[in-house]
Image (cartoon, rainbow, N blue to C red; front, top):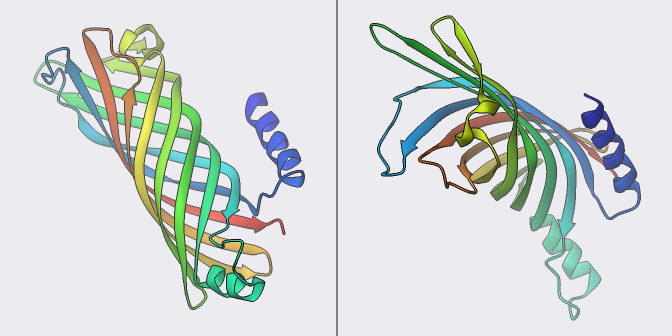
Length: 220
């Protein structure tokens, strides 16, 4: 919790000293499948998709599409139609999955924290601003458990959960103004998390579909 508070404070300080356009917070639900495979690419455990919470807090930065030869009024008019936007955020994701047979039941609960960067192409449709984005990030297991019947095991003890995971994906979003300098958003993301190093005989990936609802505060 102290690290999260420190990060939020750092964002506020950073925002006042940079060209950040907005500060945002997003919360949502994800649907995630765990993909366990051995070194031969064979499925180890067949897990059912589970649901969990997802959170993002970060800053948005505008990217100018204008050139040096463009008139100020031409650039302003074009930016109202279409623009590039970059979002840098701290993320927390809760991933869950389960499996079972006649003798055993498995439950996985994993909490990952990290950072991601989203580059979005935005366009105005009336009062709405819609966009599509590419996502790249890095995250790491903060805490997690594997439950086999009634026995609980710490996921940090498993080699396949150690180290950083690379996150890539695509997203779509809608932004709507509610009052001056305050906006609400809804967004959808499809992402995949992969181990950056897979020297062990088994590895695990995560495939997630996430719906976010957010609030944005214009800083300009």
